[in-house]
Image 1 (tube, rainbow, N blue to C red):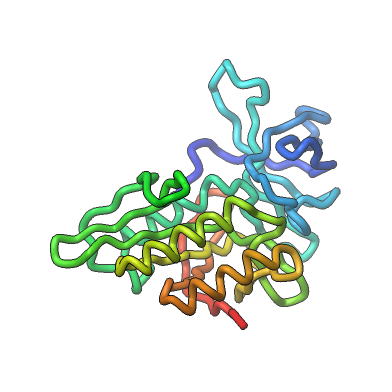
Image 2: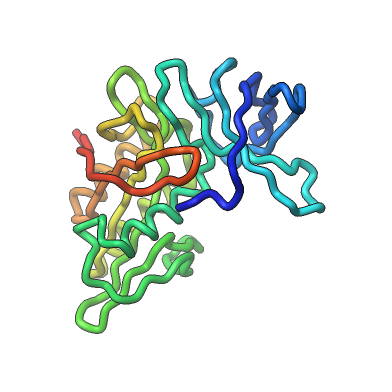
Length: 235
């Protein structure tokens, strides 16, 4: 996924009101940007991190700039715009990078399904087999050497796992795909210390046959793409 506009660099000052971040650069001084991330962004938006932001030409936007990437003090790039995970996953599947999900000539996005009024991120279809439902999650929480999801309690995420469990119990292929958007993360585990119910549901999903995959991304200020598979540790 290539960024639509060239990213500019600034210094991160603070995040607040969930979707707002203050930045500073020589050209603009201190200014506010929008941040498309509903999580806590722990370790991803600390003061004095380097920030990379895009600029929209939509005149109706209150905040024309959007925070896309941050770079921590270890020099690791992090994609904090969670909206990009689905596009990166879509392109990775389409290009055959996700080996487990090849062989489906048709790909749809945001398809309504389930008993709890949900939309599946990606649905794969083939004339020869039943469809495959793929739920995508962006992973950015790093604690020590372990990557975790989620970084905050997620009722929405719990709902999505319940939907995948139901799909699998109906005999249809169901996949949870973690897209690792942090250069420092090389493995993924459920964050039971943050959302115990999510961890419990993920274990239940595995037990009934829902497939859980994690793929790391290659991140630069020009583009983001799926790179290679990393382990998922589910106890």
